[in-house]
Length: 391
Image (cartoon, rainbow, N blue to C red; front, side, top):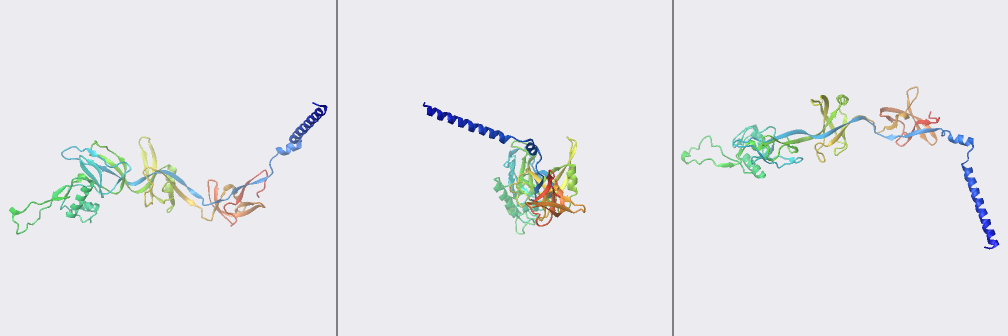
């Protein structure tokens, strides 16, 4: 390397060292603070006002009860006894969760059908052509006929159709003999009465149920079991929610005013109106404790999406703020010596005190009405920091 080149390299190295030293000094100086500067930085932030956003209503005061969904009516399908043999379940064509409708086969006991019919009371005799009575009237209504209370040939025809529809042989019976023989008829030439299809309905082959269609909520027997026991448990009628109550909740429900807003909260029945049907005491002998059950009837025209046992919440609204009211934190309310309540509206130019009327307070929030500028989205003072003024 020549003398000139060595001199140039040396000068460049000196310049790099000078620049590095300068940067180091600057960095150290930038982090340096005088005692006065450090004291100022360690002090509290400047005074300021704490604010909250005004919310849109309504504000509700009430409570929520947890319960389960069920139907309003329960009934059982009792299997029949069998004369001259054993009563045995030989088929159960319906399953849990299925529907039972009027004129539907629900079980087979000892090889004979058990058919569901809609009616208010159980059958109590075998019914035959010519019989009369309230049970005949009930039968005719279930078969789609006028309820005139007479087992006539039209009734027999419907009974025959009933058995054919469920796939079993039709019972027959003979027509009753006329009470007065024809004057020209010779006893020796009188033919025996002809058998009439559907002229007999055995009481053990139908079960009358109070409300159909119904849902099978429990299958209580199996094929091969004794037939003269409860085979099925059905639920029918409207929907209801049954909730368990504490003593305080029971007392609160007992004091509810008429016309209160009660509705379903969540689920497929969200927002549906319901009514309190009653509260009853439930005593548990095993746990030696007393609880309470409240039953709420649901006003729905359709049970779509509803199932037995579904969890359901009941929302009871004791009071609710009107549409024109807004919601502010309780800490935003300031009471003047004369009793007038105010809030301090915040803006970039400062705070403005505006009068408000407090409707009610729930869980630290207040429903209030006030001037037009007190709208949802505005900010109100709720406190101050480090001596900030909100007065």
